[in-house]
Length: 276
Image (tube, rainbow, N blue to C red):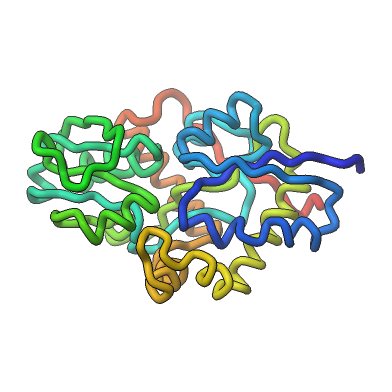
């Protein structure tokens, strides 16, 4: 096999650290004849870069795959939760059933779609939405609530004076299923075999050497070592198994019902590692 250059897109958030922290070591361990470049961008930007052919694979919002982006989903790896996620948070000043104007992060699409599903299907609320171009220190006066994700949410939960609703927890209590925010999506130019070998090895190394990942990320979003450890072990889930897939399919159905997805339902196409 000729030398490859693998162009990988990952999010610049704490939740991805166990998946990519040992990427260089995984490259050496798998003996793949390749070099790697990593673009770190908000999830919505990664989806666009994959569509333009600037990346071979991206850790991108599942909702964008359901809308048609990418070719394959890599199995066994995700950014998901089974209960509280800790970093997809709705800050609100009114009861959830009374919300009318909600500010939305522009960084993510899966989280925004999840909120819209919960508002319409769980809380029976018909709210208006406004983009949040910057992260405010408090809920703006003209809004009832605001959605923040990632490190912004982790930081804001300590300083924003508001009630906080963890969307991962609401989803799990409502459906009994995991929620998958992002997965590795292979684009038209991606060599799925090499990418899977590299990224599953990187994930396994990150999980097995989690304390090293924790030590390297103390003070991210103002978190202590104990808080980072809790986040990695109790909030974020990195698997993509049968229950996760059921969660994606339930989410897809609800997005169609709410008008977030249109047209025919896209099937989930996973790359098969048994082909290696």
